[in-house]
Image 1 (spheres, rainbow, N blue to C red):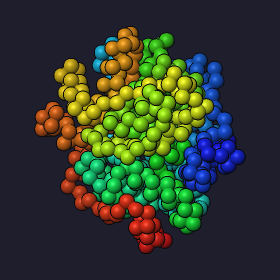
Image 2 (image 1 turned 90 degrees about the vertical axis):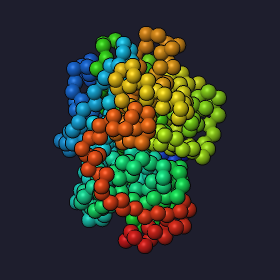
Image 3 (image 1 turned 45 degrees about the horizontal axis):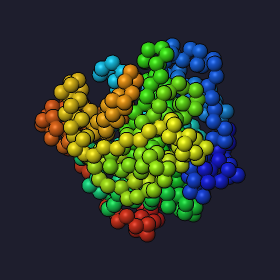
Image 4 (image 1 turned 120 degrees about the horizontal axis):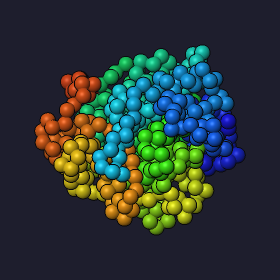
Length: 434
């Protein structure tokens, strides 16, 4: 399969170039020339398939022409080593738990798949691969876990100083080895801009053998579409879900749209954001206006210029009318988010992180005008990753901290602080990356 830049249809590359170089030289994003579809052989039996079988079918639709079946099955099986259960809070009100992986966040699915696919694509090569990634919270930890001590790779993670939770920070700064953390004096958007700039500086990118683990990389999105199909099959036959997606850089929602394009019956998508409501504003007005992000308690969603918006637009033929017919946007402030955390605990005895609380607020608003709907809200992270907020809203120690998080608390933070400007970052790369 060939992949083209969203900025230039004539710029086309193969799978290895698209995945390992991540970003086209024209600052577009890679998309497959033809979106695959799963045929009647799959949709005739999809409800009876396992999570792994669904993942293998989807991965095969995108990558089967380039990756041998045996290798692709190993990649999928290694990715889906944990479940993604749907929990029912009330009739029609469902939660998809995506936090059962090693770093307790949905990013584990994409990061684990990407690490395995990249290892396959670079087998037999002697050059070290440099994975450069910006994180607003959970991406960094998932990537660090997936690539930690993987031979032939080094990982550089940029994160905004003071804008991730303490445990999130430990997940990406305490591993050491081939993982390096850079604490940027700015926002996630500043971190993302530095990553993109490094890729566009072709001499830098080629000298360092750069690749990205952000959702600008297509191999992050495809495995996230697995769990949309897996979740829908857990509802009663004939029920078309409304997927509610807490959204920041919009990779997760784009993955859901890919699942729909593959043939998954979906009634609607809700893009649930915090005060960083660039996409909900677009869906309301038809005008897309990126702006500086603002800090909130749902920090992983603090994105003011979401990279994947261009992919979303492309999937709808760059038509505002087409997009808003499939996707609605809703945004909520911190006080509403805090109230939702308390309300879900009081009503259902269920604990959610701030991001999932934003999603549940959108689901609640949807149900008020669409009674009888079945919503599936994506629970993107374990609430224990945000102890300050959870302690404030539910009481200190009310959320049990899983052991794999607890053991990080006393580990030493290892990070280098840099300003948000390109020149110091470029100089650091030159001095530290051979």
